[in-house]
Length: 610
Ligand code: X8Z
Ligand code: ZN
Image 1 (cartoon, rainbow, N blue to C red):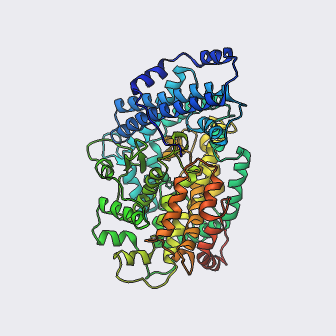
Image 2: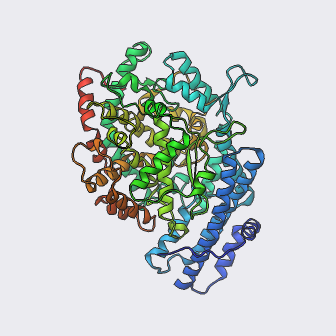
Image 3: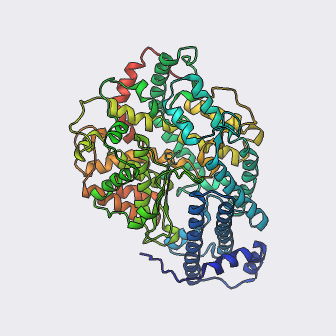
């Protein structure tokens, strides 16, 4: 395979060279006058040096990004913006120069790299250097604004609440008005982002058009080894498959919430008020399990177990690592433990939103999280380590192939492992003495996490696609957001919203420009992966009782798929693992079937839908 041979180019020289290079038009003129027909050998040499140089720029950008995300200041913002600008400039210039090789017969692998080059950035910049710089600064500022966001109930001088504080209220309070204040309070922090976002869309679209795409959404949708309109059909097909599950869960949740808060506040046949579902974005319902548990006295309470065992933040990460090691994978490097951020620092601003990093594309793996000891973060730690193990598996590949088969795969990996965190697994590792009595409770907990997430996973980018394409103009941003939230999730804001608000920006991935359809795909894929791994592990019985813990055969199958990186189109990777070449929601449906039967029974006299 293509091992990266990294000549030690001096980084400073590349960055300076990129930022001082003449405007793109000039490059284009040079290319035009170069009438000699390029050869496949030249194309390969061009790509080899590009990958080496790109890697150095990406590493510099990752380091700046890490420093900024773990210590947000004006200066770290500017340094991070500068480093990402260098990457954007380099990719723009090289994508333009690469046009020389359009139409040239190249081997499939090299041609794939040329295609991937244009798709590499989630944020392509215009070639105009002033606009590029403006875009890089806007992007950095929006993500930092999100990281620093605070709601001060008594005005700016009083005690201010972070997203973490407000999320705790959303999770644990059962007081209608207290919940409403936390919900509205967080959204008050993102109003100033609106203006920046409008300009951001203009500039990012300009960049995408220069790369040959209709708009930024078109670029994002082109990353799945099929034409963008076909991809849209694929996600709609998957949504149709899973929508009935969501409908049933929504219906039952609404009935239970009406019992708790009153039918005047949660009317039947209407969308559910968004602040009652236990999560700041109503993206999952896990924190209202107590209101929805099928059996009142048979809980599988991960939070309680972790707290009782007095597991600390590092302990949680160690436990998750042990799962991966049980599959036959190597432990994480010592530097992971030295350099990661596991808890929220008291003395500085950070981006708490969890992330996994592969700083040097070799072995400098890290996570950044503000871990709380609870079930949600226990799952998230597995999620993040899944990223790190994936990154480690494909590190032998050259820069443009060093990624997951598609972005849904990256997001699915750690979640697949977390599906094996079952009551039986807890018994195996000594967290529980004996299996709790058989009950639907664990499956309901999982459904509140996974099934509840599906419409949200889909709609965030449906909104962005509509915004990027211009179908929705800035004066309709917020209204359109709520139209989709109601259409897909069946929820409504607890207070009236206007175009002075910018509620999409209250979600990290909008503020930080991270594509979101990946999580929808991941929610489908992880069950497909789980089903295939459980088969290899010889599991018998219902799918939701399977844990692949300690199964080396399953571990090898998973790792072999991860090692493929994105060298091949993703259907090859999914086939290697599951034998299927398509994403398929039958696995998630199989998994939840016992709960679905129960929900249908519970809902039989209710008016479902909204
Ligand atoms: O952003 C994440 C991960 C990091 S890639 C923590 N997730 C989405 C979210 O929090 O909105 C995981 C689930 C969905
Ligand atoms: Zn992730």
